[in-house]
Structure formats: structure tokens, C-alpha cells
Amino acid sequence: MDYDYVVAQTLLLGIVALIGVVFTFALPVPNHKTKASSGVFARLFLAACWLVEVFQTVRLSGYEDIGRMGFYVMSLSAAYMLMMTIIKRYGHSLNRQQTTLVFLHLVGVALCSLLLQAGFIPQWTANTVILLSVAYPVWQAIRRVKFYLATNSLGDKVLYAVLSTVFYTLLAILPIYLIFFDASIVHHHSLTFAILLVFMLVFMLSFAVSVLHSLVNRLHTQVHTDPLTGAKNRHFFYEIAPKLSAHALRNNEILSVVACDIDHFKAINDKHGHVVGDIALKRFCKIIKDELRAEDTLIRMGGEEFLVLSPHCDRNQATELAERLRKVISETEIEAKGVNLMLTASFGVIEMTHNSEFFSSVKEADQALYNAKAAGRNQVITV
Image (cartoon, rainbow, N blue to C red; front, top):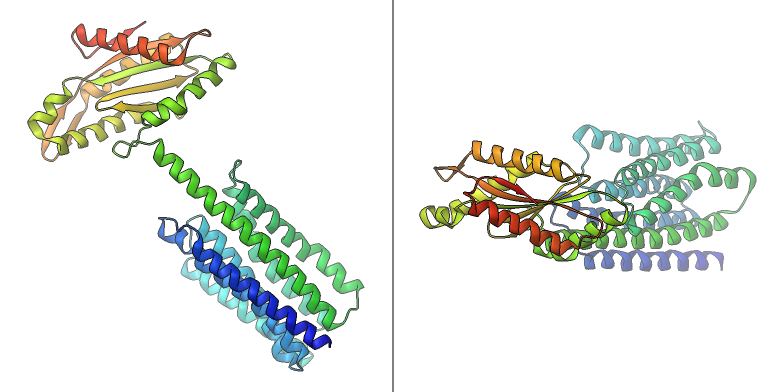
């Protein structure tokens, strides 16, 4: 009766693992080749977890030695598949030396099982080895998740919490259980089943949420980014920029707006073609970005028109920034498809006041820009 119950648990866990494997195929695949392979290791992790339960069942079938070795090796394999899922999830891989060490670790655990069978080491030594062995790759996975932990990612937070729970269970709770509870192999099997079932379900849920959150972030970035120049686009200008402005003014922070337009850019397109013009735009944005601070935001409003949102920057500092940009642009030669170009740009600058309205301030900066163009171009006018 007990054996039938154990077999039923093993089959149920196999069904859960199969559902999890099918579920991973439904998740979006990242464009990054290494990140895309994280799904493969997630499937291997689920399969290894099921095989842990299978080898526990083998032990109950009378094949104690084979079952124990399989249980040890597959437990460590599941931990390493988990680690690889996390590593690949964040775009990394193991080098050849690290891969060799993983293989040697698996061989060492198998050897530990053989020594136990031969009576050279006691059971508590083998238990200690396997617990520490499984805990190591889980700890490595925790470190990787913590390093990349996104404060706004529910999936990463759950993933970190699940891995931490597993780690401390391996090092604290399970040793206490093994020392103070002299349970039967059937009881051990049921406990293994319960732990694996919960861990597999929670891990796959958090992994899925983490992947989907990354997809949403990527789509959000694409929606707000100009594909040609890498600057923010008009969607960002209308959706996000007003919120940044309101936040700055609400917290009594200074915010300046710099409007920018490349002089006579239409003539470049007409004379050299749009391919050269596109390259010139990209190089122009690169020049500006190299001069901006991390907190500054470059927005392409369309064509050759740009805005710079500069927080913690007053009227005089924004004027100095615009003047520095103007000077660097006018002194930098741009090579595009064998054509050497010297660009100039005109700028309009305004510091937003506490009673300013964002779009009205941008309009005033634009007007200052138009005045700079009317006054001869390649200059800065501040209002």
C-alpha cells in the first residue's frame, strides 16, 4: 500500500514537471542568444527534480545502492540546472574550467555514495556532503539574482525569496530533521515529494513572472526609444517627460529645458541622401550624449529637432551646457559614407519655475531656438 502511494506521488510529480516543461515553451524567448537558453535549463531543472523523486522510488523498490547514488547525483544536478537557469537568465555562461569543476563535483558526489555503500563513511557524513553540495549552486544562483535584483520586478523578488528559503532549508532545517527525526524511507519520500512539488511550482511561477517583466520592460523601452539615434522619442515626451517635470517641481528641484536643432540639415539630405543624413544624426546624438550627465535626458522630437531635460541644473548651468554642446558640435568632423561633414546647431534654453507648465516651458524654449536661428544660427539664446 505504501509503495503504491509512493508510485502515485512520483507519477504526480512527473505530470507537474511535464506541465512545467510545456509552460516554458509558451514563455516569450529573449532576443539575446544566451538568455534564450535559460528556458532549456529550466526544463532540465524540472526533469532533474522529477528524477530525484524517481530515484527515491527506486530505493523503495529494493535497489538501495542505485537509488541512493541516483538520488545524490540528480539532487546536485537539479541544483546546477537551477543555477544555470539563473545564470543564463541574466545573459552569462560558464567557461570551460567552471564546467569541468561542475562535472568533477558530480563525480565527487557519486564517489561519496560509493564510499557510503562500501562502509567507508557514515551516513551523517554523506548527508553533510550532499546538503553542502546542493547548497553551493543554490547560493551561486542567489548571488546572481541579488546582483541583478530589480526593485520593481515582482518575479525577481519572488525568485530571490524562493532561492533563499531553499538555501536556508538545506543548511538549517534539513540537518535538524535528519538528526532528530528517525523517519522511515517512505516518510523521507513523502517529504521529498512535498518539497520538490512546492519548489517546482513556485520557482516556475517566479521565473515566468521575471521573464514576462523583462519583456514588458523591453517593450516599454522600445516604445519610448528612437530606433535610429537611441534617444528618447515623442512617446516619451508626451507620456513620461511631464511626470518627470512634475516630480522635480513638486520636490523643489531645479529643471531646465534645452531645445536644439541642427542647422541646414535638410541641405545635407538633399545633397548627400538620407543614408548619409541618418548616419550624421546618429553621430550627432553620440556627440551630445557624451557631453550629458547620467541624469540628463535627450529626446528626439522629430527630424533634426531635439530636447534635453536637465534636472538639478539652473538657468546659467543650462546655458553653459548648451554652449558647450554648440562648441563641441561645431568643432567635430563627422564622416559618413566617405563624406566629411561639419555640423552646427542652434539652442534655446529655459529654466522652469515652480509655477511653470511643462509644455508651455518647452514652447518657450522652442521660441528661443527659433530666435537663435533667426539671429544667424550656431548660437544659444536663453529666456
